[in-house]
Amino acid sequence: MEATLAALAPRLQLSRPGPLVPVLPALEGLLPERGLRPGAVVSVTGGATALALALAAAATAATASGMYCAALGFDGLGALAAAELGVDVGRLVVVDAPRERRAEVALALADGFGLLLLQGAPVAGPVAERLVTVARRSGCAVVVAGEWPGARVRLRVVSRVWEGLGQGRGRLRARRLAVVAGGRGAAARERRAELWLPDAQGAVRLVERPAAPAAAPQRRAHAGRGPLAVV
Image (cartoon, rainbow, N blue to C red):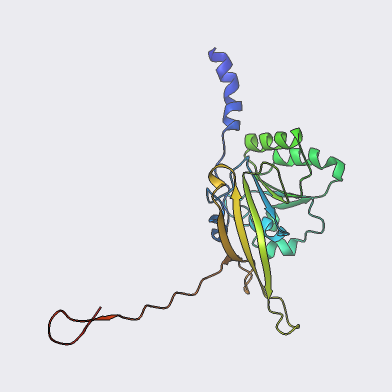
């Protein structure tokens, strides 16, 4: 029995959930654990490839703990666009594969990278379940730009507004997104956020709400004689 447990120990260690994959502070409030859970799928819908890329920015930060990220199926994805959203392109591997081989390639990438970005859903059914199993075992977080049945967290972009055009002319300087988050389990409670992605300086941050005006002081009659008291 002891020999059997010793042989199984490495597998059991691999199957344990790894530490959370960090995300930018502006995106933490959209996730129930404030980070990406290895082995869990986060789907992003609403035509927001930029949001999927932004989820990889903190994970690929050029630090001792920075991880490598693979992006599969993103046709025409440019390194400049990823870099402008904060992704360390030195830790980003863009992979192209024929559609009939994407399931096989996705499984291989989930086994070797800390973060996997998928455009659309190149796998389905049992293969999708196998991808999640492989990702959980290897400690890989998965972000899908598109629908994914059974996704643990779903981020949906409900509005997008560019600023900087003026009266039909000008330069696009900032984009404002409204995002609704939901999902299963701890992610079932709906969350909402408004983001600059990016702002005029290229940063990803929350839209700051103007402070509410201070309430005017009220006056009430003094209990006895004398001037009115201000409270």
